[in-house]
Image (cartoon, rainbow, N blue to C red):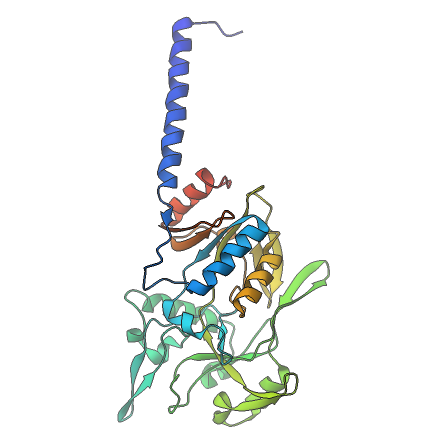
Length: 334
């Protein structure tokens, strides 16, 4: 049995108060890193019209919804039927600016800003400072499962879904060097061997006719009997809205759900599918393509934070700092 020491008891209580005060200070410091949403920012990486959709989703599902900022130049393309948000199986990067590309005796002007590009074609000038090297690494990763013939023609079959990607090589195109995807459908989910499998596959008819055709197919249109109108066979790819986290207010430590999206593991919250559908329908475009970033790992980011109270905030911190905010402010276990 431990001995009783009155002097020691006083010291222990003093230490306990010190620890409590320290925890309160750390929690206050973490909270101070959550900043007010800046409506006046002319480089805000989210459409102002979409803010209302995320606010409504946070309220409807009683969640904290954290969204990574997207490339500002991608925002004007949202909802344009000739463009499509970047799918989960495409990790290539969007360009930061338009660019003049040297070609033979002239230059080609490419409207690359906000669109996924082949960095080996558009070059470093299409990217903001420090981002070209990252774009090259991502492009190499995108090519790692492609065949020599695909790399030569720059027409790449999707591995986990029907459809193709292709680089626009038409020197008369205003989007020369930009990556395209064969027109995709909305998300569909089914259970296969006890696992949830999601796809947003392209139209196989579009794909096969495209592969067999001459180079003009990249910008050609085909008749879509489903909607009784002509559509471009291919869509250029712009930045999507990456979810950083969906946190249930009542249980921020809900277990991670795993599903397969176009052949890739998607780690997400239990409410992800419903919230994804709600947001995408509200925006009118499938801008939310995959689950929560923090379920893979924390990383430094600028985040928009939507509270179920209707308030909106911003976080712009390192990965470690964001992890501390999650633990101290939102109660998420490390």
